[in-house]
Image 1: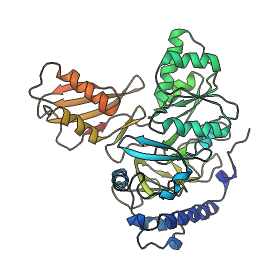
Image 2: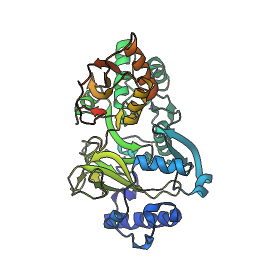
Image 3: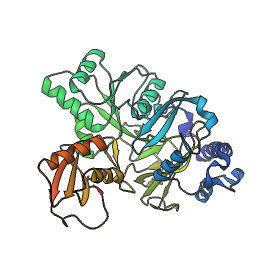
Length: 412
């Protein structure tokens, strides 16, 4: 069995840097004056990671503004549209293109590191509607030579029927939903022993949940991917098959860590915001702030891969929070309050219970009419596409700290 996906994973870091910065310089030339951050910047002066700090970080809100001002993608080269195969809209809204090339999101590398090999059938439970999630994993699996069942999320009975008929070796989706499938199979007396490996993403993977899934016969590895960039980093295994701590950055990605809310890099090992540069020919992202927290691991990875390694997802640098694979934004809670002006203040609290993400909206409302909580619950589901409990509390009960979305899930 080949340990590495290709020779790029084990090349000398200086060789990788030369290749990556050559692509970055080409991307800066293509974008030209459309990106105000690059005004007056000579592309030939971009030679190594220390030069990246001269480019201000672009964050999600600014990207949304640019896309609104210059549809569809802001600074992306409009001449590249002929190289686009699919067009998506993610919550925000933010708009993303998918290139026509094989594995446009880069996830074949993560599947390979997770133990998938050509011929392994993959049950893909990420959504295929409007957002790119399903296609991000679908493209990587098929590029590796793995047939894909485009199952999407939900409908446990149909998932079990698909597993019984096709006998997939692997699963792609959130770790929470994998547990749901395994529990449903156990309760229904259905055989899902064919599932022996999983590549999970889109939700936290606490150590307790990983241990439970692996104790039920499924070797689990996770990848860190976004709708903007595709694969950013992925878990690997040591030569003895044990999990390597942290995640290896994808070969397409230049990655640095900055102090949240600033453009300043932090020291290796210090927690900060993940900033990625992907000098892609179709949709280049240059110093894009993901809003996710992590830290660089300076020690070499025992798996032999030589790209930078991060500790994995350590929370959000802002209040935008991922719940069951979907982002929940403070702006969505503001929209809910507009629909229900009786709410003076509100806070959405995200927790874990029974290895599942849970949402509770605490709302201050002094004069709530009959059925008010049910109406708010329906609005919460309509706006976030997720279900949550509603707790009506007395005025003045919530802390006056400006927090709208509170992620209280344990890390690790």
